[in-house]
Length: 498
Image (cartoon, rainbow, N blue to C red; front, side):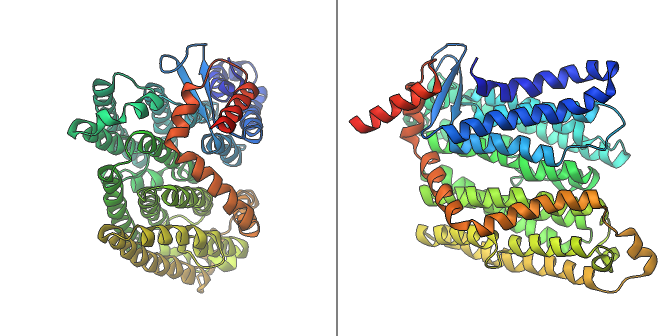
């Protein structure tokens, strides 16, 4: 077994062993989760720094398309590195109630890594189901009536999405006879028919439940409002991006025609409109951020609908920016929960928290020179260059949504800096531990601002690599069960010959 498989196997194994270890030694059990996440991070970063070209790992010695394939490129390894990193930041270190949440988080980490690395639809489906089970448990972890009701709605919609996605996968299999993504890419011409396009639409809607795609995102405000801020930050910031990654992989290898791109564009625009208008009308901070997340995911979908490398770089930039900003904002609701009217005096009670809110809000709006501005600039540029009536309509929707977004976020900031009642102000004080977690996301955002030039070059490289369908296919079918360094050498030699 190749070492990269440990990023999946270790957390899954630890998730099932943790209850047993906890019964013997609760103090030892508390260190298992962070230790496993650190090990995952070490493996992922090692491969991320080592690889110069994409590599396909054939697990178990079975060559593609028969065996289990992990596709390692800069995008998949970047996401595989972000998963343990963000979970280490959001880990419940102060939890003394038991091991249940930790086990679910480890299950989530393992299935999320598998989702990021898998190169075939069967394993993507398996890891997606494991991720769903973990997310249901985490969403209901508060054990309140509202949390159970919201989780039930989430479960029903996710179950419906699973049926749709599985139907789409079945249609692809009947058309191509394979579930390996690279093999599907070789047979993509067989999907250029109503059945093939229907399969893509079913998978987009089915997987789109986790990606907060319109119209299967009705669960989002209820779950994010009733779950703990850490879980809301994790679901909105990380899990939604992995679902988008699955859709993008399938889009690149098999569905590069205008019909599939138009579907993503229309769904993205509808998500922007519904999400941003709902956020503008919200009177509760958590619900406002929940609807805002829907709008932002709509922008990500619009970005990936732009053909070619321009859409890929805009989509990755928007995705990574939302992954940093949204968890920071959700963590502020730890003590700033409830009606927006109750936020009066929050800046006086926690000046640093108010500054952090302003930092995230300005970047989310796209005010220069914050990273959000450059991400939106890439999106605007891509839409303008596409230069079709539908893409120009999306540009108008994006600019209008940005104005709406600026209005409700700045209106919230004004309330924070307004004078509040003394009794109410005392309740708005953020704890040092919460502020530390939020500051981590702020530091990442500021670091991105300082290193914008090299970061932009890296994103361009990742986008060029990820949008290359031929490279994905050739990498998979050049893969044998050989050491990674030998595979890199082989790919380099083939590139020189070509």
